Image 1 (cartoon, rainbow, N blue to C red):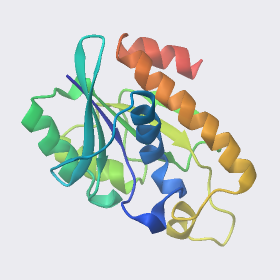
Image 2: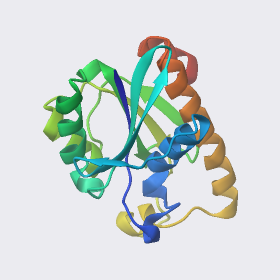
Image 3: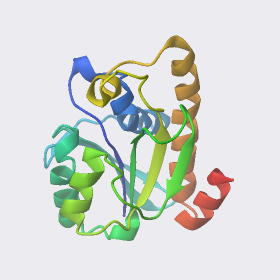
Length: 186
């Protein structure tokens, strides 16, 4: 069994904000499989799909970003999902808008959702897909920036990034993450 988690914040005011790009990838995957995120457990909305003879959970933590680990860890424990069988998708200030970067480990880099995830998983070694949102313009606070919406031009670029991220997740369901990482980071 595998677990794909998109990080974001619940509620209408946060829809299509920079910080919710992980949710958008989960929505894209659910759409591809005709699945609806209508199950609720451990402060998360999820759906279980079947791909290549394996169960896959698509999860959106509803804890707000800075408590994401409080949803992820119990889900892993309940379904007995190992650390190598998860992939976390989230926004990254250190990458240009729309650039995706796959990694198997790393620090939180100041991302509160990843800080919470690392704290609850007890390790920095888990698969992740980082989606670039770039840095805020001079004088703009980071929280205001990540909770803001994309410009029309950036929205178009991000739609491509969401599709590529979902493609990477799908490939991971049939290939080792390292192989997927090498392909998508090339």
